[in-house]
Amino acid sequence: MEKQQIHIALPSTGEQEWLATRECFDTGWLTQGPKVAEFERAFAKRHGVRHAIAVTSCTTGLHLVLAAYGIGPGDEVIVPAFTWVATANVVRFCGATPIFVDVDIDTYNIDPTLVAEKVTEKTKAIIPVHLFGHPANIDAIAAVIPEDVIIIEDAACAAGASYKGKYAGTLGLAGVFSFHPRKTITCGEGGMITTNDDALADKLKMMRSHGATVSEEQRHLGAKPHILPDFNVLGYNYRMTDMQGAVGLVQLSKLDAFLEERRYFSQYYREALAQCLWIKTPVEPVAGDHSWQAFVCLVDPQIAPMGRNEIMEELNTRGISTRPGTHAVTELGLYAEHRGCFPNAAFCEANTIALPLHNKMSEKDYSYVVDTILSMVPSKVLN
Image (cartoon, rainbow, N blue to C red; front, side, top):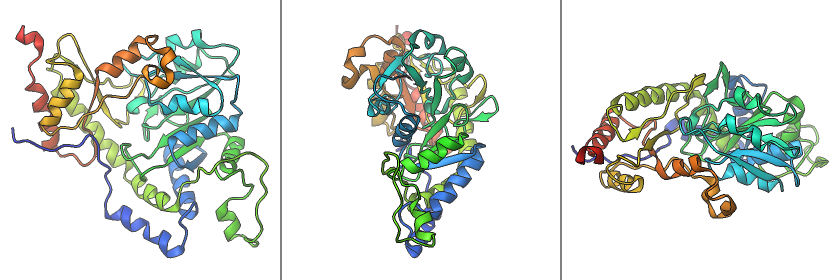
């Protein structure tokens, strides 16, 4: 096989995105303004939700929702043990305590059967993650938590994903998306909060801009732009720039095409790698649509040709970039007191591998990845 050079992910951007930012420079709207507002309206319409509030990242969006709802010291928030560290960190930003729950090895998502035992009178919220774009089992989660415990979806990877006919981001009190370059659509950095709660949306809009009662756009376009707004709540500077909003609008217009392509090649991977004994490809959702932000497989350590890290190193020498799925937050130094308590999360951290999947890959690229993996002979055959 001729050696290829295949990245784990590449943002699918081009001249349209570059040209979209020109209007911002022509008008002088560089911070949050009309392009962000347009992006919010378009994102809300695409995901079937009343409100979309743009922020600087998924992390700040999650923090903002928790803070707006009043989560604070003495409160507990349930989170999965296998996720990006931000899901737990945002709870601590508020002075609350993250309560970890192990994950289902098949879906990589929080295991609903283990949630009930972690609920206490201090539990105020749960943050299920639609990891890698696979929608969490929200109905099963809702069935085992009290009605006053709110659901906040970490939908960082889940733009366009759905569960039982409803889009990710509409399944709880709020959902939060990411536009990091490894996500399906991007504007460099940035995030989007979605909610159907009118009062929450109003509070989020104030709190993302220092707590101002009037937004910068409203003030500068109003009759008295020289009058400063009032500030009645504690807020933050979590505003998206209009340049990002302009790029986000272009990317959002491509979302359906991106998803279709990713679903096609995810199925190609699943079929082509079915004969590989030592690698388990990700499962399709039982009740929903995967957005395939990443294609994360599980390496069987009993029969794999070598350890997961060695497999990644070998693939890298052949021009194929891979990554671990994500980390077990409970195995990190920041949360060291939880080490060894969540076996599925630790197993997933040690044995998952994300294969290249993005909208700049060609059929030749996918074929090369598959052929390279199949050429690695499992130890079961060698023995």
